[in-house]
Length: 366
Ligand SMILES: Nc1nc2c(ncn2[C@@H]2O[C@H](COP(=O)(O)OP(=O)(O)O)[C@@H](O)[C@H]2O)c(=O)[nH]1
Ligand SMILES: [Mg+2]
Image 1 (cartoon, rainbow, N blue to C red):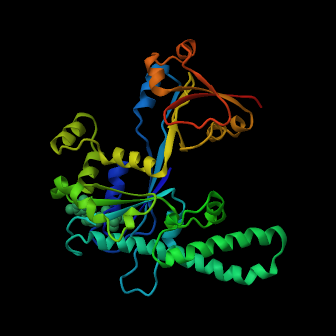
Image 2 (image 1 turned 90 degrees about the vertical axis):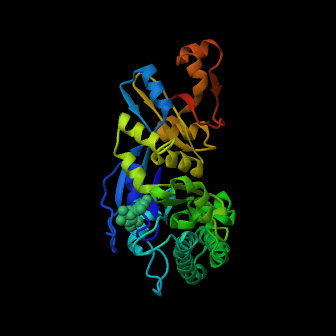
Image 3 (image 1 turned 90 degrees about the horizontal axis):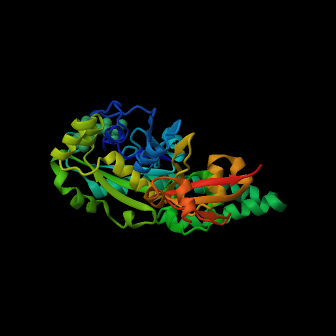
């Protein structure tokens, strides 16, 4: 899972990046961020993996991972004639599975009081403009080339043309592509463009330490003109600088800090969990003496495709899956054999939809 931190300059993206990754990337109080992104890969905390590792004592324990990318401020100057996300940043943002838009919720010496709803709107519009420019470019090209094509190629590109024509008016009304209700086929036809407003997005309000008690109240200000009501859109808040400090601590120091500030769960954990929810991702957990591991897959994935995320042979030669839900397995002392003996291990075929927390053994032949 790859998440891109975006937002206006000085909204605290790099601070949040550090909070989420335990990193020490340079933050800056002055204008002009560097263009190279900060990138870090972090383990997805999952107590189930830890517990299974304790039981199985495997040679290797592998948690799922999240890759965070922090790019420099995306908005142009307010009076710039150019709109949309600058080209140099687009390549990093386009690859992400979801976007985290950091919104400034603290007072700043240069920009003054937070302008929460204004900033949400600005970020949203930059994303819309960026997509709209791509759509219109492509439509212009297709208008010229389509008449010259024939057969299968024409069919494919004509379908793409139709989908682009469908999303164009939506973008012109400042709505995200997520709101288009595209079919699977339609989504596939335009997937290659990696449109920004087609990606799930989290608006993350970064508040100052003094606002710690008011976070839930302030987060409501994110919702203007229905932007955060759109499909696959979520909101959250954190105290970035404080969470950055927490991320640098370990053990009892960390626990004490969290207690002092009455923070139940560090943002680093909270935001990952929320991202899984936003993306509709689940984890399944193959176990054994060699490796205990968490694999991430979209909800709704069927057993052979889930097997295929581990190895393409598993998918090609898929026979069955032996499945014990995690909680069930723990009630059996973690023993797959015990679960089998008590009839708690299900044999599932190729249409089985994998659930979060399924402990799975794939049977296959190649
Ligand atoms: N008071 C306060 N200041 C913050 C917070 N987060 C970031 N800042 C400050 O805002 C400035 C810009 O932060 P930075 O993370 O570099 O923003 P970026 O340009 O979006 O990457 C720095 O001076 C930070 O110290 C916060 O939660 N509270
Ligand atoms: Mg930065």
